[in-house]
Length: 107
Length: 112
Image (cartoon, rainbow over all chains, first blue to last red; front, top):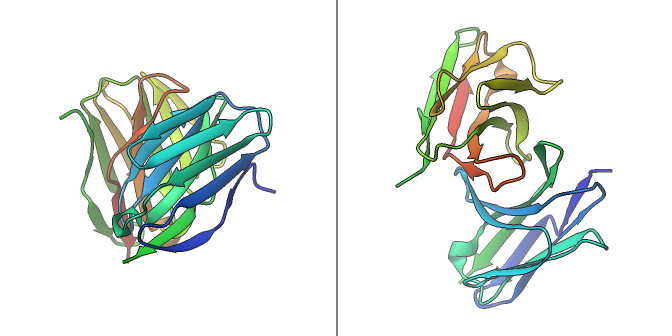
């Protein structure tokens, strides 16, 4: 079993829909990261959080440390949000990555 | 703009022919990481530097070496590339451990 699990693996949505991607982890962490990777592209850090909730534009990330669970929400989704979203946790001196969620948003 | 730069963006090499990928940063971060990412897989950490201290992952093949001559630059050397080394290579930096990591655009390596 992977130490960081994401669901769903693949997600399709119509433009404007509210999207939720989930991440569960089984190891002790100091922080959790949400990353975005466009096809063929580099990785962009969206959030780093260790408690509570953060919001940036249409993106919201929450974490529940007791339940070892985090969610990434996208409100009013847009085709440009189509990408792979990766959850990663800080464990010792390196990141442990989830397998990613591939999101496609159609017009 | 402060950023992480990788060169080249695309590299084609022949089986067994040494190749060097470069990463530079203007963020003055202490930590630099090299990741390998194969298609539809999560990035895999190869090694990282904290300043000049080199930290190799246990399962990184000996074929992969790295150099960090100064704070700004870090190089990935693949001594004898095999077909299985074809991948995207990502460089990332962070100010300290447990900080946000900033990724470069990656170098896509093709081995013929």
